[in-house]
Length: 506
Image 1 (tube, helix red, strand yellow):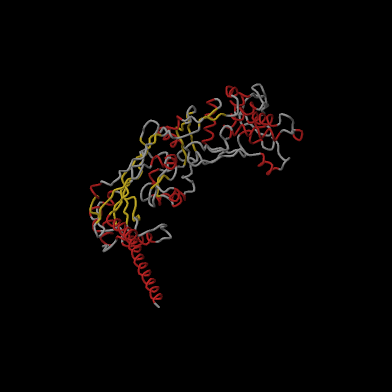
Image 2 (spheres, one colour):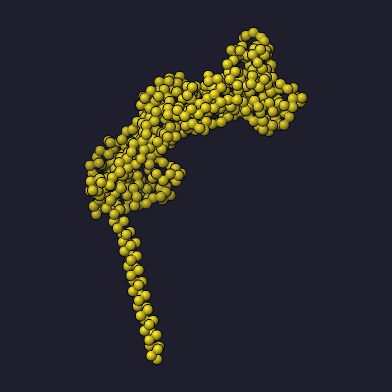
């Protein structure tokens, strides 16, 4: 009995000690975790970390003419959980909006399907891209509207109504880019296209923060500790481009009312002096609160003004390709300067000539007169120089060699080591393409004769064609075309497969 009593007391004492220990553990958890969270919550109530957006870097032309600069803009942001006792009518009057707009906008903000990542505890954009006139009234009354505050930032302004495709635009960040870079938050503005996109990380600068003190009702009382904990934003880097705005202006005026593109390149450096696409648009139309409306109009325009035809549109090069043909055919041994081909003008077969000149024609005359029969003869002689028809076992091999030489001029590919936004590759047709279209034995030089004069399946962009002319000027090489003046120092040199001696002739 005595032993049983002692044993029971032992269990009771053990239980009491366990309970005491558990109480201490719970209390420690409360102090270290719950109270820490409480303090963090209290701190979030007491302080507002207001993002300070840096001024975006300026953009200049090669002669230091200012092309793109900044103008002040303002957003109205809201933290939903901090709204209380809001005088909706007074708020709407101060912003010159109606109550229906207010109700609709607040519903959109709270709709988690439309506003991914919504939280009542974080700032949400209520209105964006307002100018000083829009906020003049409400600026003096913000203390009456707890939960709402004004966010300063900048928008782009343009000195000239030109170079829209080159310069690009900025707009609110997409969800996909938000997922890629944690520097941004919802509502940030980023480069959407052109140089603004390519050099986004240089132009954007670094954000700062202003720590503001709030009272129990969430109203801003001023800086916390006189700004001791603030971090100043750092302005974005300026960008000096290779553009000559006067030449750009001339190019756009020449193409006004037409469809096409112009690219002017400085051969020795690869610097793009002008890049024109027509039809075009005023870059200012994609700035401010009318951006969405204007963008929809541009997208809907059947003339496709948003398409950068200088880099994305693909055209048959036509007679401009004859200089390339002359170089490649010489390199492959199909012709030399003394090789002659007859020209019977409009009676020529299989390709007619629209010019009036003597016959037969040599290389220099062929280039000077842009003689179609001459270049058909050169093309055929090059591809079928070892025979003809079924006897020409090397025809397809010769075509592959011819194609590789043409590709070395920068055709059929994008300039991926430069800073040109959105390019098309063009097309130099492959042997596989012709085999599929005509059959393994169904094609020879006569079948693809249009390639001789830059037509048929050959497609190039104005940028590629301009670069090819730069190669001829340089007698065999090109520097990657680019728009950043600083890139001129990198000298990315690409040499063609054609020997220099043939460039001396052409």
